[in-house]
Structures are given as C-alpha cells and as structure tokens.
Length: 295
Picture 1: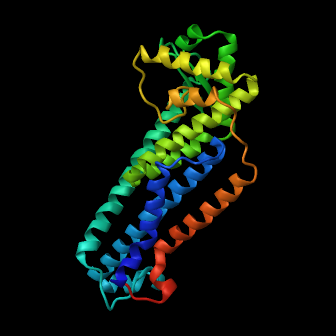
Picture 2: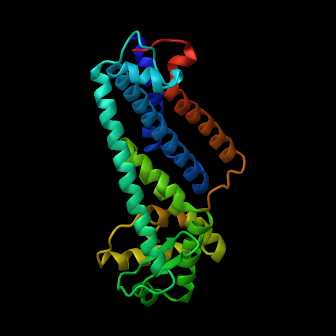
Picture 3: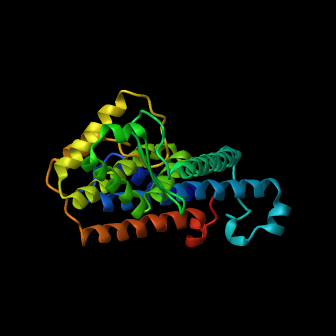
C-alpha cells in the first residue's frame, strides 16, 4: 500500500480545501480572502501536480526509451515498478481536461476584461443597475444608465468606493485564482464561492470606512440588489456591486465592524501558506523525498 503516499499530499490539500469551503473563518474579510485564495491555489497545484506526476510516469512505462532519454531522474518513480494503467490512464485524461479548462477560462477572462475595458470610460446604455470594477491600465469603474437613475449622489459614492476597493486591492487576481482552482478541481467550487463573498465583504468594509456610515452602505447594496432583480443581468467573472450574498452582506454591515486582525491574520496566512505550499511541493516528488520507489 506504499503507493498511496503518492496521493497523500493532494488528498490532504483537498480535505483542507473542502473544509474551508464550509467552515467560517473568524477573520476580517481581507484576511479571509487571502487565506482562501492561498488554499485554492495550492490545492489546485497539489492535485494537478499529482496527476501530472502519475501521468508522466505512466507514459514512461509505455515508452521507457524515450523517458530515459528526455526525462530527468527526479520526474520518475523508478522503472522497476511501472505505473498501472488503472492509475495512469485517468491521470493523463484528467491532466488533459485540466489544461483544456484552464485554457477556456483564460480565454473567457481575457475576452471579458478587454470588452469591459473598451466601455469602462462611458456609461453603459442599460436599464439594469450595474457597476463593475474593470482591472488594467485602461480599466476603471463601469456603470450603467440604470444605476445612475436608481441611486442618488450619496449612494453612488458608496458604489464607487466599493468598486475602487476592488481595483485598489487587485481583487481580479483573487477571482481568477479561485475560478481556475474551481475549474480544474470541481470540489473547490464552494471554496471559490466563499472567496468571492469574502472579496465583496472586503470591499463593503472599505466603502463603509470611506463614507463613515455602515447603514448607508447596507441600504445601497439592498437597493441595487432589489432593482437588479427586476431585470435579467448576465453573470460576469469581474467583481460586481451585488455579486453574491446580498442578505449576509447587509446583515454584516448592520452589525459592529469586524476586527482588523493585525496579528492573527498574518500569522494564520503564513501558517496556511507554509502548510499548503509544502503539500503542493511534495505532490510532485514525494517518493524521492523518502527515497522510495512508489507504484
């Protein structure tokens, strides 16, 4: 059963990713988002790393001459116990699927950002109340005519402060990391949903600090969500003002502001990053770390 060690790092990372998809973190949304993003990325790396590792070794058993000539020693388990097809074929298939999903998501993301950048400097002629944070040098805050008609000047400031927070903290990178992790490892979808929610809460708290009125921010979020519900609006990969968890966001804003976690936040992030980073690294060559010939 020693071959099970090959899958141990990925299995442990998956368990952590699944648990973090349901277990609340007692942290400020900024630190919650950072922790969830790190877990999402390292779990995806651990899983795909294991698949690639097993797939490469299975391919090496099919063409040992080519493997001896072109593959480095560290990439191989050892050729005395070849990888069985029951593990090798699924590993190759899932690796190919992960590559295809990553490419599709990257193309979609790039197309959405470029389209949004072309219209970020003008008001979108749509009756749907909408505001998007568009990243990049040519980005900005994209708003619709419906949003301008729905809100007054004070509420519009809330929206712009919220979207400015997304841009200032580069939340699009967190969103891209979460989407890629969920796309390549489907069991991380709940973790990705929690990550998106944490990013919205992070921007909410920044907006509340900027305007100095948590109730106003809560009222604005609820008002935009109700107006938007009356019209269909296509989903986007970019951070939108009423992206997710409207009820929970409003409830949080009507409560006391969360602690900044200036000590516990960095400590927990460093611990999670170290632990999951080691799992991701071990997923590539665990057998060599212990001097074992696995499979």
